[in-house]
Image (cartoon, rainbow, N blue to C red; front, side, top):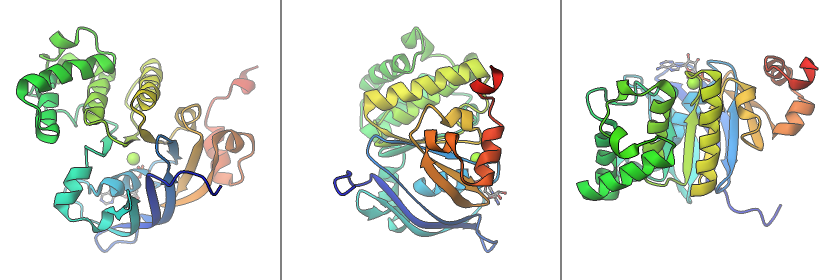
Length: 267
Ligand SMILES: Nc1ncnc2c1ncn2[C@@H]1O[C@H](COP(=O)(O)OP(=O)(O)O)[C@@H](O)[C@H]1O
Ligand SMILES: [Mg+2]
């Protein structure tokens, strides 16, 4: 235990509330080691997205979120950084992929131009260098003919391909941590599996840590070693995925597991 690497992210006693309403996330603590994949699972409304957004200090538009506790990243508390310093972290050191790829892309810009802009802004690349990197990134996430596809608009891509584009944007600055919040929920099952495989490959190739969030235990299992089970804004159980599968302690965890079709049940 003593020679475990220091965590990349160390969240302590995180609390979040919308304005003066009762907290929707209460006293959550967890950590993510460099390069580690950690899962968060829980039913809709259990506070997964609010927790994810807290790490980037991103409130949903028009909804003031008030945070408490500590989010330690590289020794500094993100909840106490000024907005300017936070902008240096968001998208660069810590990036996020959301559930709905359409609402995160600009429908009137080509996907290539959107990635170029990100690279020019965050990495200070020239337009020409940015385009080279954009084409590389589109290839990296498995888009064929990337140089040509860069000139297409989001509506010319399927849902799965749009999610690949968003993943390309998210990894464009080679973040230390990628937060994927229900990245496959809007996709059909075959495409889900492809996107999950892509996330695993990128994590390995880029050496980044991953926070994978889903309401579906089936998505989390096989992707992460450690999982946190969330209910009503709290972490109710934490453990090794295999151990949780074998012997869930919390009745809520058992209920989530019962919702997953299991191979042994089909025999
Ligand atoms: N923009 C918002 N304004 C007010 N309450 C919200 C908002 N977004 C989420 N909530 C509430 O916060 C709680 C946690 O939501 P969320 O983190 O989105 O859950 P999950 O991602 O697990 O489905 C829920 O009770 C939800 O109703
Ligand atoms: Mg959510």
